[in-house]
Image (cartoon, rainbow, N blue to C red; front, side, top):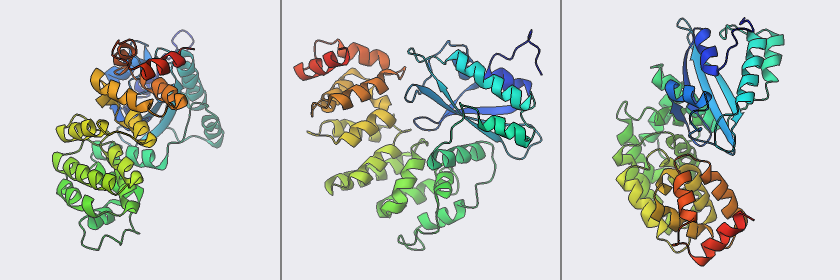
Length: 345
């Protein structure tokens, strides 16, 4: 145990002192790796949290000792202040609970009493099934572990040999493993060939997995083709899922062209506007695109939606300066100026 003269002042220090190897991921919006250097700056309140979700940092920390066969996973939800900086008091409270329960050896198998203490930790949360699958997949792929037993049936199914209607044996973990292993075994070509044929039951969870992966051009191209078909057929659920799949690939030209064309539509469904803010926010890092987006957002004069999305976007460090500049711009339409005025009442 640490003495009071030498308190453990950060999660990074706690992990290092326990002689653990570790990796840190944001799992709020999608699964994004945070480098150790970046996390140390976040902990020292030198950097705002890059991917805030409803005023919180949602973290997955995978850590392991050199001799261990599989990593331990912590899921931590810590509040952020109004500047997007980590709440130091909450972070220190989290560390105190861990040390009280486990001491400094994080790798011990906790006793029942320790387990009870850890479960009472107010900063612990349980991710959704899709996020949990994605974290398992990214950790096993990055540590060069084999994929789960759910992966081969997905690979077999996506190759199309068994018929597209025979999807009942595949699961979320297998789809996620496949997504994180697109560079292996010709998987990117297998996927590109499959996208046009996938039933909704497979396409929706697959898109949730792909949102965490930088996709190759051939896969993006097929997603765009399927999206345009879904739009023509008014298949909103499929359209939204396919947009989600592009979340880590917004820099690609095909993706950019699709989203630019989408913004030119006369009307955008509320759920599409929400998915753009929640998953595809990097495209709004441009004043012209942001203006078009904000005009869509106020089209139905829904001040509640406008206020909720504005609050979400202004918390993202890369979008905040562009958004604050845009709301002061003389180029605002009267409707947009009125909606902005309502925000500050």
